[in-house]
Length: 469
Image (tube, rainbow, N blue to C red):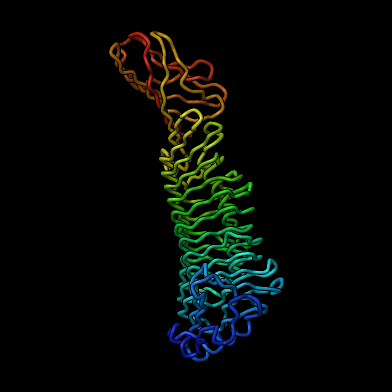
């Protein structure tokens, strides 16, 4: 005996079941009229819409765009079990639009896959607030999810388990010009496409959070912001295989916009081709880049292309299999008086060389900018001979150097100051040494800073320096 409309309603509770309206789960015929009729009835009667899969994977063929213009729940039985596929939707159109100029509040949407027709966009969100979107897969479209709506009318949304990795030729997620996303969280989302997440010029991201999101395989940037930001927090996010030559995360506000209040923490950057993990193309006002892990030889962790930046870069770990610091692994491309850079570790895995990179004086006196880099290492040297520690030929700046030897034959410790005016380093100024009065432990040979092992047999000199410049 076939199920009746009543029994369908009993299965789905208060929701309207699209099968009751004649939807075809085989995908053989157009289900758009049935879906739209169920949506319209639910909106008019304050109900919801249920899309069943009957415990199998079903496909609903949609030949005309669907529109939800009221605060209803729109729920599939499962993301893998329900596929809503557009056929002939056409360029510039959306498979599903959720939009109302007066604002839609309190929706629950999810548990389905949207598949475009390679020419259309998939999901349009306009003036939606206090709503939840979860377990949605978007595939085979130009753009995956587009946000329109003003700051007050695109507000307080939660997006969980949005997957946009497959066959998105444009952007996985876009904030359109004139649109804003405010007090919204994206968590456990996957962003693919040509650009993973794109905030267009004239758009706004305000108090937006991304938690444990993955940006993967984008031909352009993982994240590109050309609009304004007033608060963006990215926690535990990852980039992988990004093909941009410039940066994974690009902040490039246009038309007088500004990026204020950006926090990027606990992330993993696995480079594709980009020179920098993060790039600010104009002044960045108040940022934190901390506790991130980078791999595959980014030239800089953060690249600045403006002036007046203010923020902190600390506790990041940079790993490289090629090159040596500072040509590879430099945290920044240029010093900024109001940017503190400290306790970042660079590791050249080819040589096992480790460099601690940091900021000696984040608040310099009399406007003198200073980012310091510290390095430690060791070198074997025979008695009464000098060994080269480092070269100051092309750097400029002031170095505070420490060396020490502790062995059965000798124990001594010394500090010195080395200044470098450019091509030729001056002689070191000895601050202190406990070598028993046997002569200086430091000298300059050309532009090389050298240290001497004065007692005992072959010994290992341990040394470190802090460079202020």
